[in-house]
Length: 84
Image (cartoon, rainbow, N blue to C red; front, side, top):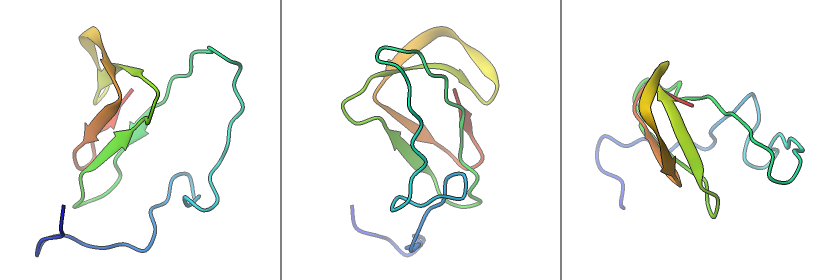
């Protein structure tokens, strides 16, 4: 999708003070369950978290548990939104 007048093209996005060129890699056992809390800390940009070939389970949004866990491969994150 092309940028529009409201878009900003940043040279880097940081996650835990790391860039995509220097990611933090955490080893986990095969088939282990890992709970991630992702926070969109931006003040003007929405993001999509893409799990690639993996499927995750969305269990909470903004600290509120979902009525039923939702299988996902992408999660849209609005400004200052959290997802577990």
